[in-house]
Image (cartoon, rainbow, N blue to C red; front, side, top):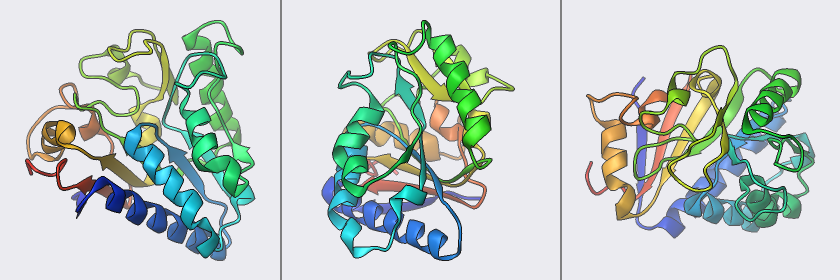
Length: 239
């Protein structure tokens, strides 16, 4: 299934459109009697989207107590660290909309090692997850990494695992927990987000007809029903 690409004039326009589409999809799933499961990402454009979700949420009938929320990756740092994706998402919109089913990877306050954190997070998804994600939101790094799966790293090849510890991230902080490809492939809809010219080369490599997952990990995640790239003009400039 070919990926779909939406190009918006600016990062702000992208964030507003993505937030509105997320809220619409959640409302539709709930009106059909489902309790949606979504995966969130971190980063600048994700933060902009999250703030837009908070701003626009009053216009949609979404019961956030019936949305199960997970994270594609997390930084293995103290629970109150500003580097935590979960903390950023709570501050941007989760607390404002009243989300209650927020599932975080353990922090350094909770377990001793990043491997322990990954094992706990994977077990939590296995025990409390719905078997996959309705919508998995992912960023893409300038090097083509996705979640915390980086080019050339051993974590790219993890098997029989939902989450993996990444002890040597080339991007700080160095210790992270990431979903594996096997886990991310259990998403109905995969939404990638990128903004800025600095992401344009990685976006082009990810969407090229040829290339490898070792070189560009973002190539390795495809939704079962939809793969959608949300871009602004700058990040799409090399397509």
